[in-house]
Image 1 (cartoon, rainbow, N blue to C red):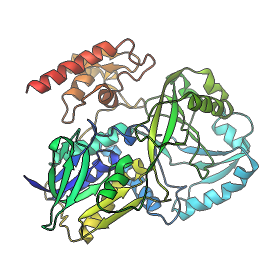
Image 2: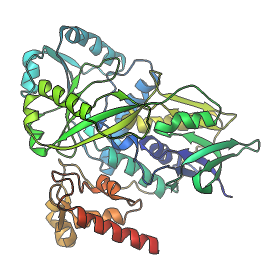
Image 3: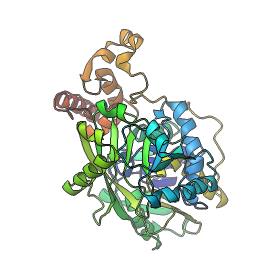
Image 4: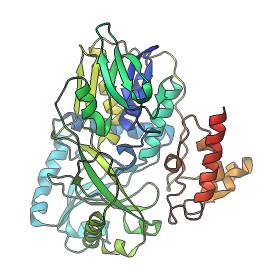
Length: 464
């Protein structure tokens, strides 16, 4: 059995970022993922905000990594074509208590190294966001908060890691680990797909506490926190100029109204602690709660069509910080309790893990030659799409053949995704790569054709 240097458990945005980071060295890297695709867990269903870290708890590891990750991911997004819109954010106070807390939030931002927040009065709040409901008392501006595509981010990390030599094993659920005395660890997976490695990195998201227990620890427990969101049709986009944030509470950051990188408007999330780590179903109570919140936050939004509703699970723990630690003797790194800020912090988390390994004596010297970073296909609404690019259509007519009319997804884009280095294995994966099926009709008109294209590609892939 071949022994790799590192096995990373989990192919979410953090696991893929770590794979990208370590594959830039001479280390051999394998990523194992219980599901059939990258980013198919917590990473695919979040509020998709590139955070400045202004409201993180000062002095925590999370605060420092989010602050650094904001700049790292922003630069990387520009390099490889991950869609980002610099919308800014406005934190709105609706009660006297919230209004009185604004100076403290500004001071927290300053303590976190972010000094651009400004307290504004109610008139300025409504000048910035005229469609807000009545009763706002004031606000706090966060000019550098942004929206980003979480799907393309995870895919870019994984694609670059693969180009650097990392291997990805999907549908490989880890069931146990055995730390040997010979400097290796046996990672046991369902179906007898066992691996031998020198180091294990736990980036298993909702399952990170389970993996941590495999190594003999009992330092945190994941309580899945379900966040339900409503997505409004593109016609609602003109109502919202920036990310509208509530004043955060102990439970979470509350319900926001935000534009999305795909041209929609999002309302949510809820925050409901569950026992079931697989329950991503939406609920009538969640829908009612969000409708009520939306009616007070932005009444005009409720006049628009809801395109979709979805729910994601966040890896909440009993701790107020990430759980990132290394055990040199067991050759194990835990990267657990990574909440919604993990998208922003992903590249900084990866760099931090690399630093922990280096301090433990692992050779992480950069390789002399690396392949060029990938150029990702754009699925952002604010940037040119293939159907708008006459030169692309002239050179390849498939980019002019629209399959998904709601989202203007061409047959060429679907073909490219199906033939990529990391192709989708199901319709959900194809949707995350192209936006097909996620428009107003939710696949009613294009679903059969898109599924046929996927089935043909999967059949051809299986025949090779």
